[in-house]
Image (tube, rainbow, N blue to C red):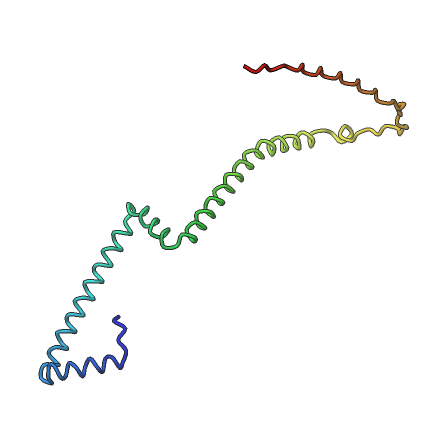
Length: 159
């Protein structure tokens, strides 16, 4: 808590022994222990009070702001992932809404095709004939565009 090393603690105890004397050191140590205990309980009470306030639903925007200030890159990455997930969900919902009428039409068409008797459902094959070829014709040449008239020169007089 105070970053006191072993050597520093020995020096502090030696100075206390010289200044206070051997009779008063146990009394001072007890009072210092009580004071440290009171400080710990006060800080725990304060931190639990702050936690209770921050856990309040009304404080959620402030909590998000403090998290954003503490880790801006992480929070922005989270917001980007949330936005992408929402966008994917919207696209998926739109695609399903568009596919739904097609699926019902397909199901109706399949049920109608199952109702057709077999002898009618098979298409008749036509005898193979050679395809007719049309004579090749050359495309007509495009007419040449007429040249635009040149603008007339205007003389400017000095005043």
